[in-house]
Image (cartoon, rainbow, N blue to C red):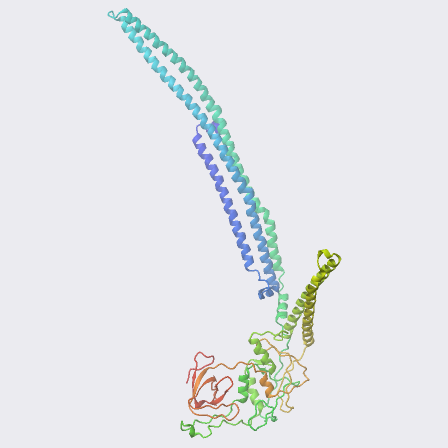
Length: 621
């Protein structure tokens, strides 16, 4: 099977076919090139995807990735990053082993094809030239034969005519001989050229063309083989990375198998455990028996001329928890009038009421009734000292000793702080040792530097170490304090809470550090046996920096009211004031004149206009 013998007359078709073969090879190169671009793009997108979901360093999100499921997710992201790297390897290998080689081979193939077809065209031109020579000699021989025949006929005609002279006959004979000789020469030339053409034609169709076509056939077959080898390389490049990709997938499976739900549950406990014990049962208070009332000048809610009963919180019994309420609300519950306000005067004139309506005096009800009223409000805390801490937390201030956290979380934060300080101390000590060694070198070799130049730096480092040690001791003391308070993990600790006891002396016991307040803070634990008296002035000091209640509307005084009792405020007819607490159904409205003057007035003495946008405001006047 040879193109030279089978396709001896298909020169043009072979030229088209070989050009098509080169086009196919270039198309395959383009395909592989686009595949490499896709692999690179895919690898880039995988890397970006992995990077996008990696936790940010030094962020809260990074702390959340301590769970085994999150660690497995991180491992999956890392494996996907390696997976992307293998696709980059595929792209690089295809570019170097296929695209570059085939591009170079295509150039060589084009040159070889051009050379072979150039030889073929040259052979064609040569045989065509021989054919033209043959045709030319043939036409000349034919022409000479016809002229010799005409000359012979003319001679015979002249020789037969008796009227023609002998000279004319001789001349015609000579002319006929010349034409005959020319025909013989043309014949010989035509015969020679014909033989030469037949030889050249034989060489062309049996030697030159078969050789040229054989070269073209071999070239085309090499192209086909090379394309097949490139396809094998294409598959091998993919096959080479399959084991590594398999390891990446195995890594993902291994990471998934490493997930431990029990461990994650334990981590949740460690992360959010407060260290408090659940509250105990609340004892029943029998209101059918009137409670005895102790009178003291230091009571929180005394009337004019009356004694002020002290309160005691503490004891072994488990009682109510203090509500987390602001000073304004707490004091309003303790000091607000509990008697219906007087009716408005019959006349709008201030003289109609000589001394103004008197605010009602405090009823002789037990003080526990007052506390029962605000103990039902929520949220709750343990003692008054937590109020100030809770308010500071709301303003964004974080205590240095992390006292805003529950005991267990506080212990972890303190331990973390101690570890950080120890690392800083170690770093400073390493720096001090390095400076000391450098100073020793300078002392031994003064030409290398001045030892005195390092004294300032050495003193500065030593000072930093001392500061860090003092800071560490402070946090270690807090840590020891917290660890000393925390109950044993397998021991059922009891929580102590304050309970009002009218039978005991008027004292207040600091609340135990056993319950977290709603804002995340908790009260400092004190010795349960120590009792500290709380005076009304001390209670006010806890809220000196408390922000006043926001105004929820305005009001205009319809009548003059002279507030003479505690908790009330005097107003003048026509005066405009701010409403900070609307009527709760007892007939009294809480108003404010300025930051320091606020109190209750009878609701019927003022015309109230509440702001619709204010929180908790109603739409009535």
